[in-house]
Image 1 (tube, rainbow, N blue to C red):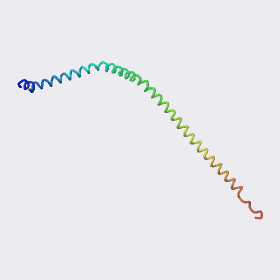
Image 2: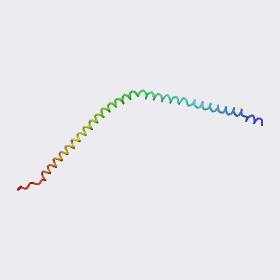
Image 3: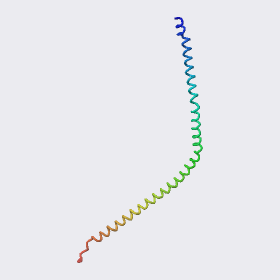
Image 4: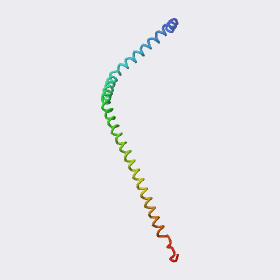
Amino acid sequence: MEIFDAILSAPVLFGLVVAASLVLVARAVINLLDKVSPLRVQLDKVNKVLSNVHDGIPKKRAKVSGLQEELKTLREAEKRLQDYNAALMDVELQAKREEEDKRRQEEIRTRRPEPPEGL
């Protein structure tokens, strides 16, 4: 019984828990070290792609600026064309109204009864 009491004593159980914890930590570190090299290669690939993307940013910004300037001129041209189209529509509408007025005047003249001859 003394052996069981000695084995189940607090210092021995604490030592076993500490030893088991150290074994688990060592095992986790070993597993991590096994996974580090493939992850390092993958990280290097990602950093290389990211570096290439960062190197292309100034060119793309310049291109975007050029396209924005071109778009600005196109929008101004579009505005001028829309104004011109609106003016043409107004002229066309005015011409139709004048033509309609002339046609009505002609109808009024042709439908107006002739004054009697004796008056």
